[in-house]
Length: 533
Image (cartoon, rainbow, N blue to C red; front, side, top):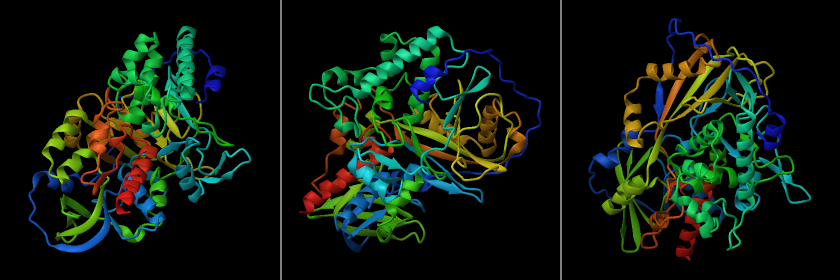
């Protein structure tokens, strides 16, 4: 929700408690638990493999077919380098930007949108123009976005104090004193958005490595977002809920844990503007960010190889040996490459390299958040009063982030059904404990958790729901805890090994957003080209 619309929409109203009907008989819901091939991936950790003979030679091998790996491949192909392979464990590439589909529409299994890009990200803007997300540029050089890809109205709503309100910034039945605190916070974020350090760089930039190193801003990485807010006397309970929601949404981390620098970056890092879009606008698709994955793959199809479990990577004199297990025919083989780009999370990279010191460092500094994503096929459910159904629908004080309507972008006048994608970062306990607990839950237990939450706003959701499929992400994203962004650990882990093994992944930026993965891939590709030359 735009700040000006927030100010215009400040209203008060009576508080009405949500009614729960606990007496209804529970309906058996169809569906299953799906997700990344963790049981196969764990073989790297748990099993020892024999030495395999060299099957083929390649100039470059990229391990990992998520955003970073595919971005690296795309850049290399653009530079005329096609003697390369991208290896990925899954049957479909995309990492956390995977998608599913039924006969109504596609739907996201993970990342589901991108905000309007910053205008200085020329490679990124060029990529979006390739995909017709950007139609052209106006006389002022501003991108003209394809209206079909901009999120249709209404974009977002919040169920709070008994009814739906427009936008996610709390204002319905919120006291004037708290509204003033919220507005003051938003003004501070606006100032941070434009702030520059003594080095002339933006205080909060994308990619994060382009941000100012001015100590005035760097020091924000030493405390938590909640602590910083308390120091600044941002005391509103509603504001703290909203900021905590935002931090859990982008980083899977509570505002009590997250670095204040990272928390502020959520609000201040986005500066993009189009001739028909502002920095708060959203680009989205029924399949979520898998639309962008297909764009990255477009010119790399012959180089992509799925169902390949890489089990070992090592340097030998003037080359790198990558040992793989084909999960289809169970054959073990090795590839000799001049260079290797490891585009996996660092805890995976350390195991592939058989580097215990690296693994120890990763385990000390990096925590990876587990998520549950539920895709719900439902007939149109009953609505509570207030703002009409939106693309993004959030429930105040829920453990979840609410749901997006994956069918929102379809050009249907009166759909009989919807695909709703429900997001739950598992942030109550430690990442390890939450991950273990998630693995023990049955489909029935997950479905009940989802329906019990959504019944607060859709009383008949249980009887209207046809199917719920649960997707578990055990290590969805790294937490940007204090000291990660401006400490030395990211630089240490990003360093190439013998100028032949290079790294690319969002955990090396500390912020898990599409742009970071995109530019991590490009930077790794540039390092590789520099060594080749």
